[in-house]
Image (cartoon, rainbow, N blue to C red):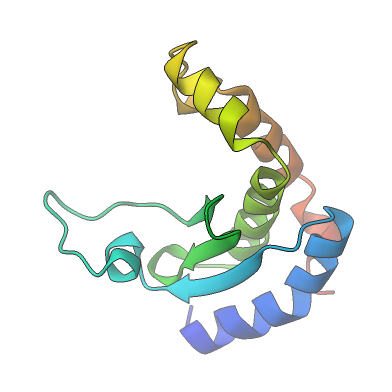
Length: 123
C-alpha cells in the first residue's frame, strides 16, 4: 500500500477512532521504527505496525508493514487504547509482574478493541 493511500485512510478514519476512544494523540508516519529513530537495524528489521509514545502522546504508524485498510484501522485502534492507559501501570506489569507482550492485560485490552475495526471500514 502506498504512503499516500495510508495517509488518505488515516485522515479519513482516525478522527472517528480518536473521538470514540477519547484520545487526543497525534499520528505520525514513518517507513519503520528505524526510520523514526534515525538508526540502522542491528539484526534485521522490526515488524512493528505501530507504536504509541506516552512521552510525546503520538501514535507512530510504520508504513512498510501496512498492507491493507484493516492493518491501518487495527493499528490506530490499538494505539488509541494505549493512549488512554497508564504508563506507570503498563511498566509495572512488565517489570514487577514479569509479563510478556502476549499476557500483558493492556495488550489484551488493545487487541480486543482491534476486533471492532470493521466498524470503521470504508467510512
